[in-house]
Length: 114
Length: 114
Image 1 (tube, rainbow over the protein chains, first blue to last red):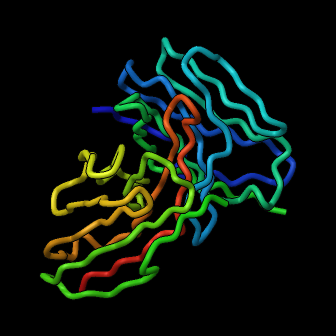
Image 2 (image 1 turned 90 degrees about the vertical axis):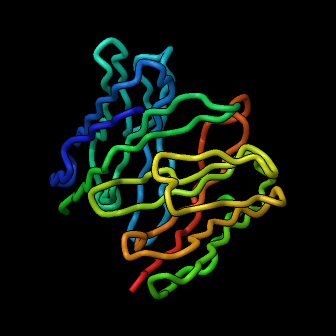
């Protein structure tokens, strides 16, 4: 089955700095890569995603890059703010029965210091 | 927020007792999922459903069963709870892949097995 490795497990930055979280996956059949943000006591929420036919996608301060050959993808957050503090999960998804079944990384706890 | 509710939100039960968790959606989405979240493990898929009475196993299905008799409800049952099933359980929903790949998560159920 799919195996997703996510690093680092904890990331501490100063407000205004950039943050980068990296993930690798093992199954070349995975073709959809979402990133979720989870705030304390809540369920995860999608913040950005990328499909395998795209190398990079950006949405305001957040960007994701994908290298299919190397099987790795990354989340980049620029100009971090205290409200960016949360746990971030990457996932690699394969199609199954009309849906996409994700395998999640173990999460990165991002702490943004004011 | 997507219309997803989970009940109960918190439950403490004893080893060996049966437990049923309920996920209810008002979005009429076809796909529903059950995950468990444990420290250091991220989110792991237990079972998912691709329609009424259509379900399939995820990566950690042992000890769990599911049922979906209506589009809006997806039940997760622990036939005989064990301490290793102490976890936070999340339900998620999604439309078909042709519409959107995004999964929407519920607020979670914290289950403690003593």
